[in-house]
Length: 553
Image (tube, rainbow, N blue to C red):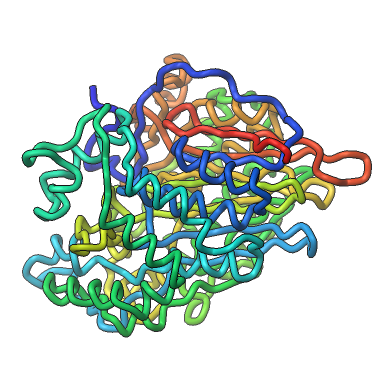
């Protein structure tokens, strides 16, 4: 069996990973210079090296993100987009950095709907490329909060791209699965003799090494205003895409105040619109109206209640998502206890209610998440993606850059709905990088990939630690469920058979999947003076990532 597999088109929205070989247990909280958890050991090592050299969490986050561009080339990178949550210890401020950008000004949403010829293909290829803003986000992190030289933060990534790294099973599967759709110049990099590279072979990305070196020397301007941008513009013209050089010139990462709710004894802080994270807070708020602990962890009663709350969260996103400049969601109502209590009262404890939303276009989502904290207590929790594996499958020749297919995640029917591909508006993302505050201080930072399951995985992890007192590694490892259109509940294969039978008896249609999400998380403990005293990191056992505490200098 291949390392990662999509079950079918019906569940293509889920990030599906294998049961991994056993590995040593995650460490308990340890003193150190900070902690990094990411989806790939080489990226984790890059961040730890920056912390151990005296850099802060923001410096390390740039190094991790750049390294992930190399070692997870199909999952994220400078041709992609994302959502970043930060905590700045000196000011005590939590901020949201939106790197999902804006839809290209030349987009015509009719290109993605019948009767336009090839409308289905337009949702996946060149016309689905939206403005990539990840690199602007990395630069914004560094400019506002970084402490090291910009160029040195790219050293690990450049070395990995230039010298290569040995592919794991998961690395090789992603290449094999997408290889047939690669252009010839990409096949020459990711294959030998027109055959995709295998586990144990070395992937060397010389073009990407040159691109990252240029960015390290000249900053983000080399990408958005220089030769790299012109090459992207040329590639889009040749392939019929909407993205243009003018969109790159105007691309900006944008800082926002986050949104937050109180759940039990913690404050849950996450990204504000234009990110579509409010549906996750609605789910958590509804669950907060019940005695979750009394229901029992992953019991039939607990999972039935969460499934019903999760359906409503899905409905809320479809109904209320919108660009805050045009149609802001009614957060005062949606994030109120009165609303949660009303919705909790509508849940039938004995029977599943049918889900009847407007239809949406559900495409596969392959993403990455990482978390970083430093000795001062600064935190970065970042979710970044290309959309599908290798995004649009367009690599800009000579650069090593894969371009996203962000617009595949728009909602094209009915025309003009808030999540349609509106030219020039914010691209709405469903990422949920989250920070939990306890007694006013950051306690846990977490996030996950997984498409429409992201906002369902994160609340389950939060309930695991807050309601059930689980250690961080256990909270990430516990089986999960997730609602999926048209009206199914996806269940981890580790969920016991009797629990599945109980859910089915209440009217839930179940579909077993190998895994839901691939979360990373960290936790910080404090001494009597309120200073960071211990760090713990955890990486989801469903994936191939890891966590490491950085050694003190």
